Image 1 (cartoon, rainbow, N blue to C red):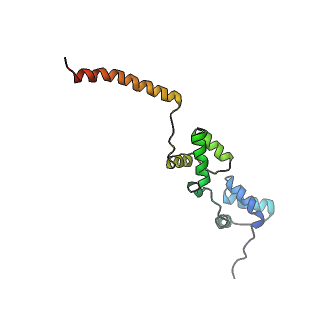
Image 2 (cartoon, rainbow, N blue to C red):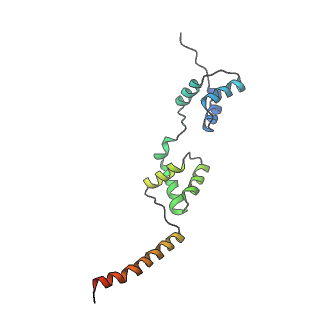
Image 3 (cartoon, rainbow, N blue to C red):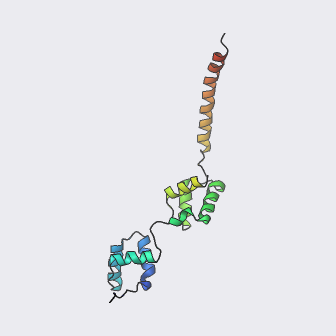
Length: 144
């Protein structure tokens, strides 16, 4: 005779919320027992989360076209840094890490630009280097 399956549907939202807030399956089990007087094993919590399609990591971020479009807008039009983009995306409900954002940005061909101050500094260094090396190249090419 198979075991009777416990109905966790009335507690589904609570379980999912606890899980997304980093509460372990064991702690969720203890919480359900203390709050609702139901005994459920840690493994049951884990299997039910799998059955409901709930995961810690969001595997869909790499194929989410809306997210890709939003990243392009934030990067190209609003010219936000990775940290600022991450903050905006997380506030909008995207479950994305800084590493995933960086990886997606590169996949989309969006490469970080130097700030205007860094750009000016680099341009000055390039000009200084040219000014130093150019006369030497001219002297070597035309010996007297």
